[in-house]
Image (cartoon, rainbow, N blue to C red; front, side):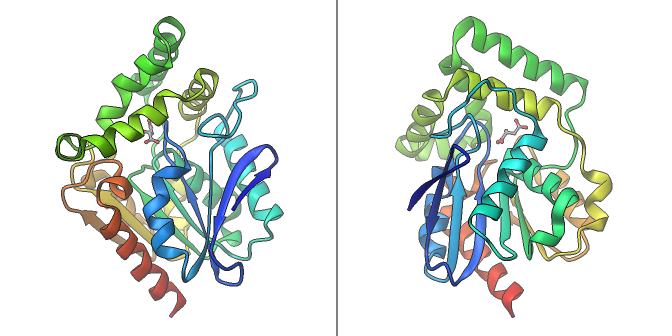
Length: 264
Ligand code: MLT
């Protein structure tokens, strides 16, 4: 089901009496990156996903986004849908939102899943790269930016062996609003670090990392997982940064197992 909440496109699937789980996508993608997981999980869970403001079907408005406003949007969805202690699952930029949500309101969640993400803020080189991204969108358009950015998000193997799947994602990203994509870059460049808070996270946490993730490699994610009290760290063989798209069934299985263990 598709609903509009505070102008955001929100998608729900499954029985509302089941345990809620919210999926937050990465940049510059949309809610569709979780399609396989939602299909696999909606029998036993109430699955919620949405397009982050400015991406997918959620309008960009003036594009003046911050990580705080992204977390405000997440909070509004929880309030409006009256979700009771949902599990929160975020990938990469969705992970940045999730980690900041842990700092702001961990008590509203029952468990956390961090996929291919990190708790560090952008360093100077990273911030300059974001600025170059904005310049490139202004000068050459969003399609050009996406063509340069997205290949780094996938393993080489996936892009060759699953060309149609890869191109489908690429085409969707290329149709993103330039204002929305620039707003996402600004929000990520301006985000605060959440490393200092990792040791305070007390809910069960699953940390998932694609073995070939070039942006948030296993060594970085393993270190992050080690700091979180009740964490389980898993590596998805052969997958890159977009593990839920590249190895969808294994990722679904791992999330299912985790949800069972949390319920037990
Ligand atoms: C993402 O997948 O959300 C982005 O790669 C995150 C980033 O650029 O830091």
